[in-house]
Image 1 (spheres, helix red, strand yellow):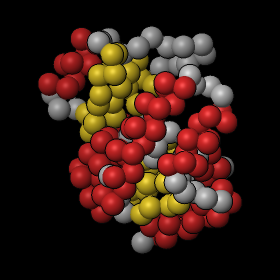
Image 2 (cartoon, rainbow, N blue to C red):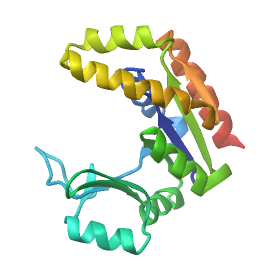
Image 3 (tube, rainbow, N blue to C red):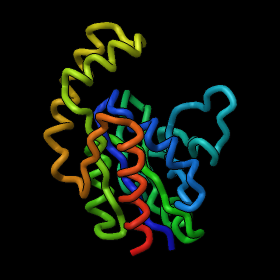
Length: 188
C-alpha cells in the first residue's frame, strides 16, 4: 500500500522544481495524484491522465456525496478537487501518491489521512527572496506579484501545521533534504 506525500508552498518557493526532480527518482515510486476538474481539457490533455474532466453539475453531485478529500471552486463553475477513490486506487497499486496543493488543501488531506501522509512545506529563505524570484520569472505584472506576496505571507504563517519545513535557500540541498524525508517516511 502506497503512502501519501503532500507538498505545499508559496508561489516561487521552488516547490515544482523540487517535485519534478524527485519524480525522476524511480526508487521512490512516486506518482502524481490525478485531480478532478470541471474545466475543459486544454491542448493534448487526456481524461484520466492529467485530470478527470467532469461537468460542474457532476462535480456538485460528487461534493454532495462527500467524494472529495478537498476541492475548491476557483471561479464560478470552475472546480478542482481530489477524489478519495482515486487516491485509494493509486495507493493500492503501491504508488506513493504526490499532492501539489495550496496550504488549505494540504492541511485537509493531512487531517484526513493522519500518519499515512507526510506533509512537506517548501519555504523560501525570506519574503524578499521570494519577491526577487517572482520578479525574476518575468511572468507576472507587479500587482500580481504583490498579490502573490500577500498570499505567501499568509501561507508562511501556516507552515508549522506541516510535518516538515524544507527551506529552499540552496536547490540541491533542498532536493536532497526532501528526498531523505520522503525515503525515510516510505520505509517506515
